[in-house]
Amino acid sequence: MNTLKRVLAVSAAAVATVAMSSAASAAILMYQATNYDDRVGGHGLWTNTYDTGPDRYYAFQNDVFLTIDTDAGTAVLEGTAINPSNVVAEININFSGFLESTFGSAYEYKQESGGAYDAEFDTPDIDFFTMAAGTITVDGEQFDLKANPFVENFAFQYGTGANAKNGQFGGSSWLLLQDQNGRDYDRWDLNFSMHAVPEPATWAMMIIGFGAVGGSLRRKKSQKTLSFA
Image 1: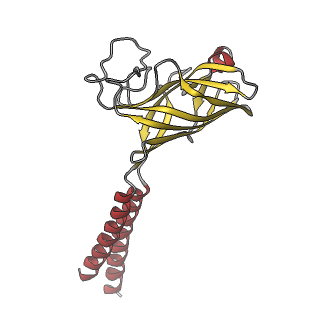
Image 2: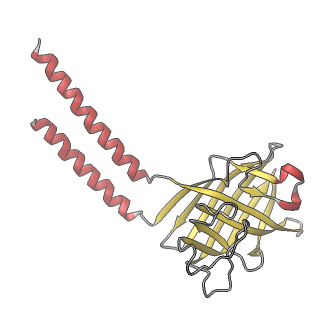
Image 3: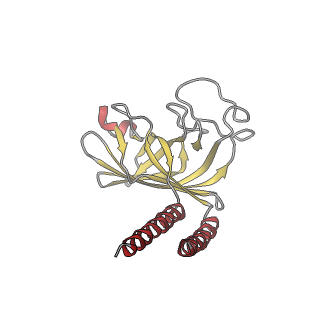
């Protein structure tokens, strides 16, 4: 019994240490970004006139993540997407200019499914980034976000209801890009669902807990074996 108490005490101390480090890093939120839905043709990136037909639809791969620094008011979207012809698009976009609501601002909410939207009352869990910089590289050809990277009065939106295709938890934006020869490419569409990724500290606490229980069980088994010897 005393041994088990010592195990639990050590585990509790370890968990407390991990919890403190978790609190220190709580400003960083990470989400896996996936296609806006799972149907055939569902995608995370749409390249408009750059490609034709189904090849305009790029499916997000498992390495696409949106990482948000809530203290700095910035975010990074990076990863790869692949179209039906197996052409790879590499996404690397930095967002800034955090805005909690479009209410009272010059920005509009992006919604493709129709219906009126009131930024003050309808979906308070949507936030926005009003600036962006970065690249989308398609089959080795680099496209840079323009100095004013968003279409008209839109921005990048994320949160509950921000998936413009279905109103679910996700992110969405229309982007303006330019190739290395100065040719403009308008209204590329980012539209994706978001899934929270557990922080490393959470995994660490789970591992510590499993380890403590496993160690305790092994010791109990060993003691029972010795008692029959």
